[in-house]
Length: 200
Image 1 (spheres, rainbow, N blue to C red):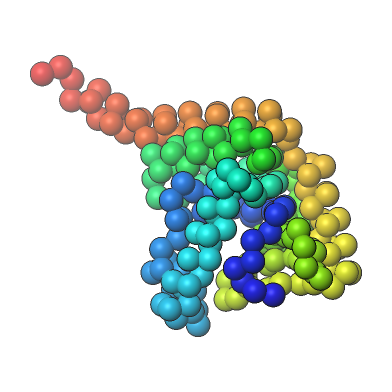
Image 2: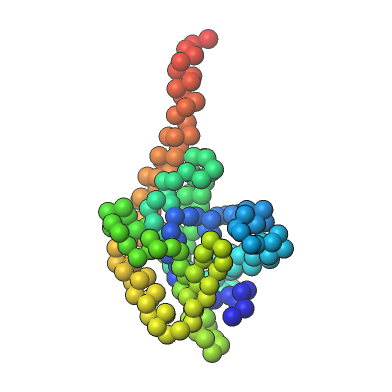
């Protein structure tokens, strides 16, 4: 299967990352090259493919229909800085408000779940002999599964994740609260330092 084919529908479970929903590329060539056995050329090509797919989300003529189940830990684990997390989560909430995008968070209360094994995507295509594919992202390589048994197995896993996830409204509320936590974390040290200095 060609790596740059654009699916019309994508259902995905993101383990603990927001990279693919960032408003910028979210992955530089140097970052991608950190994966073992990946050359700079391969990393650059991979980044270009990802950017093309990301642009499909915003294509007004034919936007990508996207369902996302996101682990709650992705909202709280600080990658970069609290300010970067705030920006990313606000962008995530903006995406979730789009009519063709559904974002749902799987809360900590759901306990152990199939998604703990890693990130996967279910891709559905509008035409062609193979209409659905499972995409697995691994540390050293990516994998595409097309057997009917694999499609059924991962489809059932995704259904279980959906069943345990918060509603879209509940998800937006949780993301909003997480944004506030990151705002407090970003402003807290400066506020404490100002308090110790006292009036001038």
